[in-house]
Image 1 (cartoon, helix red, strand yellow):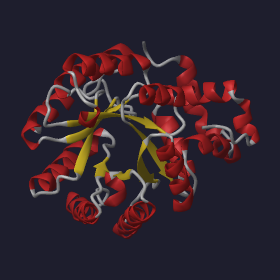
Image 2: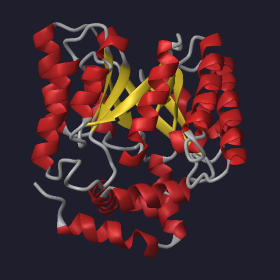
Image 3: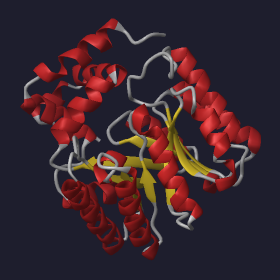
Image 4: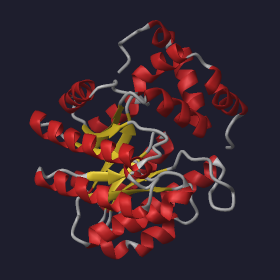
Length: 313
């Protein structure tokens, strides 16, 4: 199934949508602008039986001063998580904490975060961005894990042809990783393009990863076929809930996360927050036509989202 005309049309029109409307839509998928709002959301999710990963929004980081400021804010986030007793780790974008400057700067800041997180028994997930950043992101996290920072983990994208080889090369490291499909529009030479091919890649990677008991896998999906396939593999292998978890985005298909939780799986919800919510939403919707179409259909089914309806989660 290729990306539909409707989805492409919506994604190409995002920049024309007035900011107040984007803000209404964002309120379902972004916790707010402040750490206090993010903590409140995390507490609600914890009370409902979910784990959390917290992400500070920041787009188009171009200077090390900005990257260092974001790193310092993440340290404050870790302290706030600990102070409130929240079951939450953090997720960081490589370009937001140094890679936009150099791999050396990324490594320095991720090391700082790993050390600070370790002091409270917490964990740092280093996100994966578009393919030009893949080599540097993998290499930096690998060096740090091999240096003893085992509270760091990667994200790998099933859409990329290279992912199976990357995972095999890291097998000796015993990685902690999130497996997602990937939201970035990549060329056909390096990435699967069709819905069916991406799904087949995702399931193939799950079948490679889940039997490896020295790996921890975050199964990031909102698709019923992928969740069903994962559950079938988990059942076949007799895995226990401490060996994996499902991961979902805030506001996206809450009925799926509820079903997975009620089936006894651990579920982690990605909670983004920050003043850069508009750039985040526009960029993500432009980069991911399928998600843009999903959000638009959600709005059409729930017009109260545009009228300030707050019964959204």
